[in-house]
Image 1 (tube, rainbow, N blue to C red):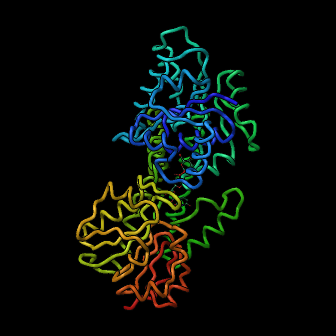
Image 2 (cartoon, rainbow, N blue to C red):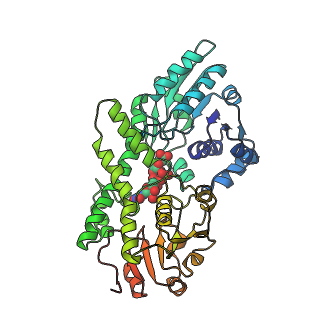
Length: 441
Ligand code: UGA
């Protein structure tokens, strides 16, 4: 059993805190945001993530996890301190490390005995070296700590599953003492554990996210070619992905990547290259292709509806991916804003993310949030699938057709079987499957 502090209880921090508590450790989560802290102190998570509420409640009730707004308390009552605060993008794409810098100073002021300080937020290479220098500079007593890097690879929507069953664990350390502590902390995991120096660990994280984003943009680029030539991107991706050197995962073409990680990390990694005199042009192109996905969708909308102005459009899905209520950098935001500018009348559904999107885009006479996907179909002249929730895959398409004014589906995530949809009498626009349409020209 270890005494652990987790500073910052966002997605990574809270899931890590609950995960370590579930493994039998004593955890203090430190959170500055009062609204979030109030919920956490009652044992409720501030965001939706499968199994999170259940495991938080369990460990809250058995006393293995508690929450505080005080870095001092977290530092003083623990031996291992994980830094999990946000590293949002700055205007120029580089990572804003100000929260890390503030936390490092605070940790320095409250060190009481030897601590292992572990950087878990996604950060540019060399950040941990800055954390070390900051703590040394601001520490009142003789320095009594070590730093380490332990990047997190969990995905929203399957975060706890990913925490307990990762493909690998990466540990960047400067001594055997730090290495042994972290290996002991992860002793129950049966995946490979990669032990490296700290800079290497930091680069592994940024390189992994950038590579995955690049894979998505690559398949989206090929998807456009499929569309022009009547080929089928789903089959191309399958045929390509069966090569074990390539792999089938992250070859899903559609509206591109969103969320709080890929868009930010691709740009930040590009910036790091620049700082070191290197041109990561691959990543610039990755970002550009991703930005173009919304244009591709809008081309389909216009091809289907001619002018969106005054037309009723149902939008299914606003979360950046299924099984989360997160809308940060979600493609839906751009789709909604673009259609609104064009004067469309929108009826928007999402199973979980409506409260979050409402904070960004308010309802008005031309934009309504609705409680069921069928409500979004009522009187609609087109239906756009933006997020591939399972609930939408299982829709009764006959009912959908009856409810719609004109049966047009624009499927940004290729969730439907084109033959089935078109045989029911829909015009079906999808991504990179050029043969399917059945237009009434
Ligand atoms: C991503 C990484 O997958 C995690 O390993 C990492 O820990 C995390 O970022 C992070 O740095 O914190 P996440 O953003 O939660 O996780 O979700 P993903 O499942 O990776 O999806 C990212 C985006 O890519 C979503 O918008 C998704 O719709 C899109 N995507 C994914 C595709 O368009 N095609 C695909 O084939 C896969």
